[in-house]
Length: 310
Image 1: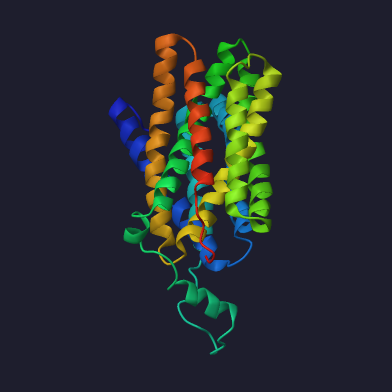
Image 2 (image 1 turned 180 degrees about the horizontal axis):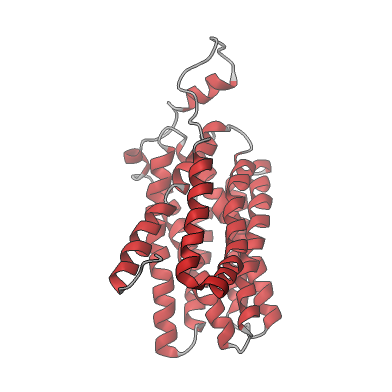
């Protein structure tokens, strides 16, 4: 990215290579339900809290680097940090054991091995109504998240809010995301993934409805806080939900298939919101679409029929 000179290079390096570089979060989240038969929500929350911290910390860090060294050198610095932290940390990850240890039939290791034979294959999963509902939840969730995170600062500055204060809306989303992950992860462990996901979708829909008429700093800050909380909740619950719906036999590829459907929403969200703003000079219709989609995700959640075993 630091060597960009042509627009096609931006599309290739950022649109393709960076996107591929973001994909390891799928196998990372697939490891959690395979290692933990209980408290999956809490464990996912701990893992995904790093993403919330990144959303909260990196925008001001990147802004400071750019102000000191310009954007090309800033990309080099971020690249070095990424290589050192991510590549090093990944070396410590371990897959669940492949065989029972010491012949202990009731050991935790035995339970982990038994899980490999439980659940659906990808072909079986995609033929169910549950997968269709999962796809709708993922699509609506990522459509809303990308549309908001790409355009919320532009929307705020368009309301004559100073750029620094406008950027705070994005940081608030990242901070509230961490809280939402842990709160909803614990709620899922105590009650169910379906209940926690329903609460999260409801909060996201209500926050987006609040955003439509909002035109002041405090109202945008309130929106960012509630939206970020809901964002974190939904994000942390999808992986354990897949385990609950389809088991852990093919968890990684089923989660990836759902994320593939969601990525269509992630791609469409910012484009549609931007097109609406360019055509009408306002984000109102875009926010209404996001609100409707968010409540569509809520309805899909309510229609889920979870398995009694995961």
